[in-house]
Length: 117
Length: 112
Image 1: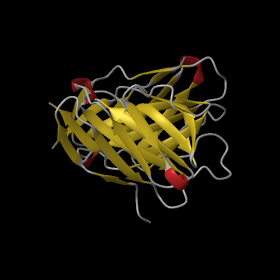
Image 2: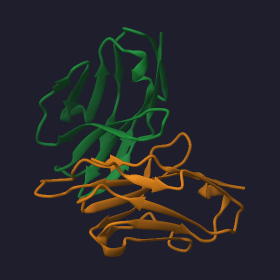
Image 3: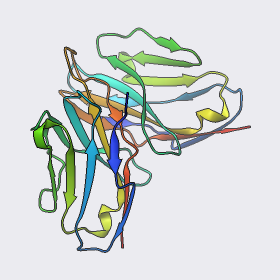
């Protein structure tokens, strides 16, 4: 079974530029998550989709971050414009959530390491 | 609001030693789920265990074991006879009504 795919793996941009990250979850997984992991910290949930609907985006800085999940499969996360403090690893995860009581196991992608100069 | 505290920032042990990683959580809800993940140097988080708040039974999986104590709000993780491949950052996470909170992680270094 293929895992969660993310691209690009690395990205370097200058502040005020725009950037987009792509995630392809495991086939059939209903729920998709985007996390931000700053160096030395735990992952922070940015947004959670169930199919193509948003479940939680309370920690997404909506003035500069946006995310969509077209057709309930792939997802893109965009930052526009980027700030220095956005330098982090952006992790995508997915979970099946089928007939499961409570949160299902999340499977993580390799992440995209963003450096904002 | 929920919170996860992993007070140990870094731990170093010599191979074959046992090591326990601490996790203390805070939540007012009675229904919640706890997870442990491993993040090796490659960066990809790997699921280790999922436990719900109504199941306090301890679990053992090979060299790994977990001790869940609701009385102290702790969900500690023990690696027995550690190996170099166990070197990684380990995260404890709490989920309440689908809202996920991760701890800051404990970096484990196993020295050969």
